[in-house]
Image (cartoon, rainbow, N blue to C red; front, side):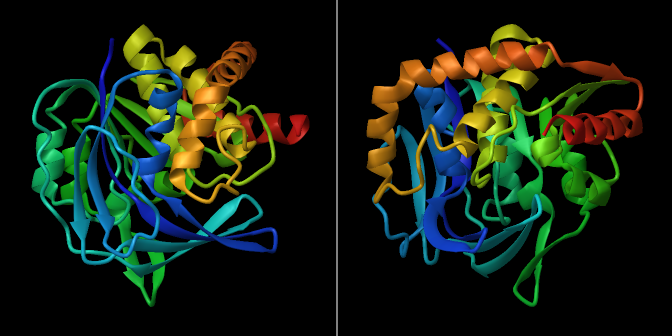
Length: 307
């Protein structure tokens, strides 16, 4: 059975979406463990949380370091875009991954781990996936902005899988990793390997998209490590993300994190069935291109005609 390590943090997320405001636990440390939990795969959690984090931390093997303050974001969603402000964040910490795992998921959200921690973690799994977001985020007047850091990008270039959204891609201006994943929000996702670009649309649903990038990458890594098939992994990741947005993994009305995992135990079979059905549907809509511009153009036209 494949085992997975997650290197990430818990955050406090203040969400503003369609006039609704609420505060929710969040961070890749929460969202990235959802696919392996649903699929009953061993998952080890390494990362951090603030001493002011108000919810009970779920128990997973691994190691979590308590920091002086939590990473607190305010995310505002408008017209398929997200604007973020950062309210607080801790100093970077060092944390060791003690052994080799089948899959490694690495996703700092705001430079909360040292680069030495990242370098070492990248050697602790047979397949490593990294989300670029936390490596290029900076803060200006409280607002989160994106800035390219060539020193960091050189490190990420050696990863097996690197995920970024289209805005982040436009900032870094290069493909990273052996396989580069570029997400297009509700428009779908593109995987670039060698000189080929594979596009698979989303399974379109409406809801709160917070955490979809983490679920997407986690699900992609699981399926890719199992099949080595990029198309199947991309379709599986998009399908899993749709389940989260739709509120079938959790409703975002739960009072604490433990309620989420209790619900998952009851709903696992149903969730897996939905994910598999949507995966097969999306696989039938895949398209291959020889340029990123053609893939993006097709994605926007295709989804505009199907929503």
